[in-house]
Image (tube, rainbow, N blue to C red):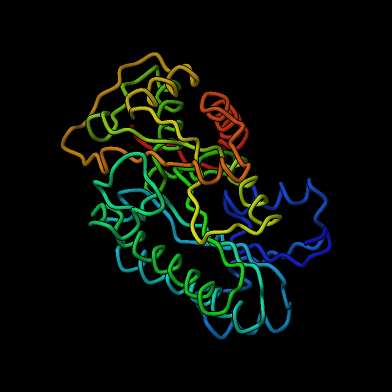
Length: 316
């Protein structure tokens, strides 16, 4: 690896991909490639193959995926499993066929069983049943992990999978129909504050526990994997610390300045009771997160305020 190595970041305009791009640029990498979805449909096998033939990237970072929260996963199960498999299969297969030696595949902690022991260790993969509310996305990501593992085993190439915990940060998705819990809460509390501190209704009981990692820390983990040859095929990336959804809501309420009531709608699903990552493997290799949750929420809220005009107000 050197600063002129040709690196293709798939999904470079998304929250994770853009953070990786910014981090690599800041570290002096000058040969980064990014193509918008309008220019290259990653679901199209021939288009991806042609792109690799033309551009000849040396390293691939796969941050491209169809993502969303419980509602989106529930409403579009076919798209979540099929489109994610199409994207990753086309990228991985084209990378292998074009001789790419290093591939970093990004997944999600939802690949682990719903009731796996806590904290989640990499070895728990495929040891039990998945959480039904996001199993379509999880199955797709599991196939990506195993495909990269197969390439390591059969061809000896440095294809590694990083499984982040819940990510959030600048350039997050604040669309209430498709967003994840943390950005959705930021938007709900902010708009409720503007609406005379109206009550905020949140899904579930507030008792599930979740772990959150600021996206810039995830980008640093990707660079770590890029600059080092990791000895195993699968690594968790997170903080190793969690809190209840109720505690998260209270933290966001305080940061946004909302002073109204929080109502918990227990008719809505909670999802997995707990998803804490065991990040000891990455810690042992030398990577650790730097940005703590409250600082990260404040950074994310500041970015939301700067870009608030992009989001159409919704009825609370």
